[in-house]
Length: 433
Ligand code: ATP
Ligand code: AMO
Image (cartoon, rainbow, N blue to C red; front, side, top):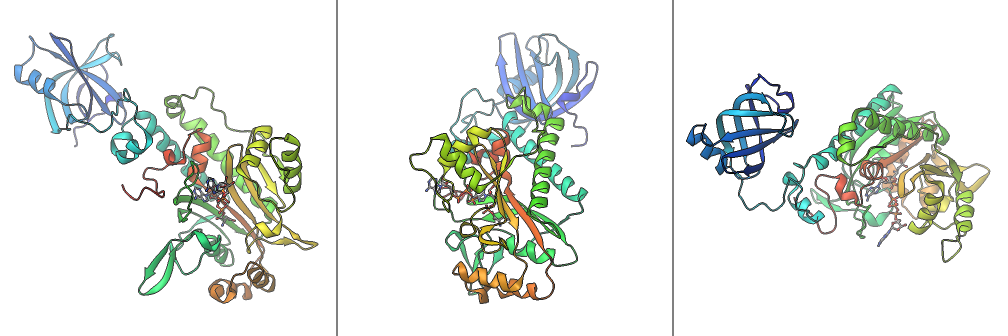
């Protein structure tokens, strides 16, 4: 539509052709108003019944809400109009009429439950505050990609149909692959590690991961978007620096470039965290959690942190923080242990007060130790030969991590449910749309 102009650009004296959705129609008797909404904003169109062509007025009054319309006319100053200007129409065309029975009210006057919103995402994302979530999500991804590029990291894409899992055997979705057993990938873990041993050295991926999580919680998805990072010749401390760097970059970009979106979401005091995130060892974390007295039972060395434990510590710290030096037994086979204490691993998590955001660590790059780790975890190393064998041909020390984009969006914007941060979430009950 070459002659299309945007509502936000309309200035008094302009001849415009706006195209968008009929947001609202108000018939006051002698005069009626149509509010047209497009991506840039809204504009009022005025219909004066006695002064305008009858057919034009009739077309205007017949428009059902959310129909797609095209309005051509002159822009005039009008202090009583919501944006101080209005269009006096010469031509109104209904391009795609909307059924007057809408399953969801995009003007937001009538609240809808999340399932109804997700069933009708097209209508839901017509609401500016919902659009704002996805604009911010896009800005986070842009900022993170820029950050990775600035530190010499190459974006890669790894297979999503794979022969083996990596993050524990129970959470895989099986698929049939020409008669062979295969799975949807839970994590790019093994592939990104294989690439740090290649000439690329430092890589990142933004892509989907699939986990057959049985539980239904406000922070788990069955298909999520993971940002993975992996680099040769760095240790877990340096990996945490990069992790912190990407998150700071994401928050700063949103603060700088998304003020309008933040306002729509009700933020007037959004502030990117400026300080470094504290780094606690697992042992310190246990002590501090136990000292809060919030748990029924004291945690002991080797326990994973329950949601209640994470909450108790998160409430106390009040911002992002790392937990380092986890017990080896609760971290995966690819995480390296300390040489002087094989019960202690170089794995870390980045926590937000509400939940875990990131897992990562220094990786085991020594072939013999890696194969031993598989056996200790009850995995058959021969199934992973495509991966382990590359560790025989010069695998540098390396470290990395991953976070779920939806958890970052959810915690940044204080959304109640992770599903609000995905256009078309996959959960136990939801396979379409
Ligand atoms: P990850 O991304 O590594 O899975 P996570 O925070 O999701 O990290 P998990 O190890 O998947 O952690 O799950 C542990 C947490 O998930 C527990 O602390 C628990 O609160 C929650 N969880 C697990 N199963 C259920 C369930 N059936 N119902 C409610 N919450 C659960
Ligand atoms: P992990 O399994 O902890 O680590 O996943 C990393 C991060 O991904 C997010 N995430 C999820 N988000 C929503 N729904 C899910 N079901 C879900 N599962 C995970 C979380 C989590 O912290 N290979 C390692 C990473 C590494 O060591 O590099 C891994 O997958 O934010």
